[in-house]
Image (tube, rainbow, N blue to C red; front, top):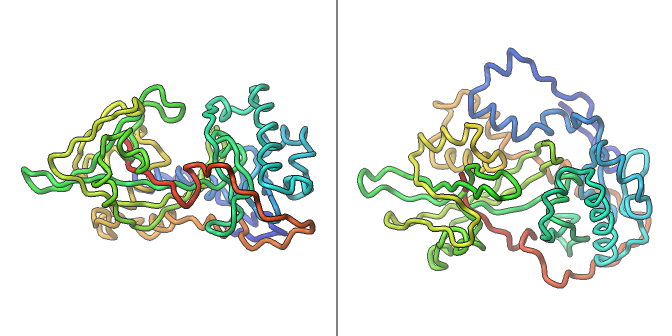
Length: 347
């Protein structure tokens, strides 16, 4: 697969076609990780057809599939179409104007019930940035609209682990999501978001604050709900052997400490939350449980844990022809902003 820029757009020269015989040769780990990167491995072409970048102030902030584009065409004063892209209208020249205009469109699409992702409307705000760590956010959107618009999402997963007092072996804490969660109900996932450590797992602040930064993973997946362009900052948190997580806010069904072997078995099963798989595999690689000796496709595995999203989203796009004043800061930055989002492992 070769991808090149085309005036800020992503142009696919040749996509990858899956050969059934080759697929059977993949290890269980590689199969599930390839599923996490389905859009990337399709050559950035959706199952729905060619996609177009979404630009705001000359920066690519999203990717629009054809099935979403057909609805956005009804709102040219907000999402202005060109032959190669969608632009947020130049007259939307502030954080507040862009946020309000996009919100009206999303609420209208929700009322029309045409996008499945918006059925999980959460009334949670999500900041959209032109470039990670640079300047102010360009606008904010409803969190459930991140995937239909192909917006890059950031989060921080913490893998909670301990050592068994009986045999000293490492155990990884996993949680089963509550069955009434809007996404991935009842599925296994990373433990909990750090900012919600007490609410979701009863972890006191003095323990949660000892989490150690360990890098990041990224993946680019397509699902029924849209495109998942995710970067997850990963942290490790060692918990005392006698500590048992307990849910406080009702968002977790149960917790369990499992062996590495059991953890890997769950991660490669259909019961594990797919978007948490890269975090789990990254932890096992860093701890030496997945090695070139145990995983025949080790080099490819590492590559698919670090998809170059920030290059694919054209962070150095040409300057816009209209002026775009500094964004007005949001009244209260949402928790998903890159500077303060933190998260743990779930099952």
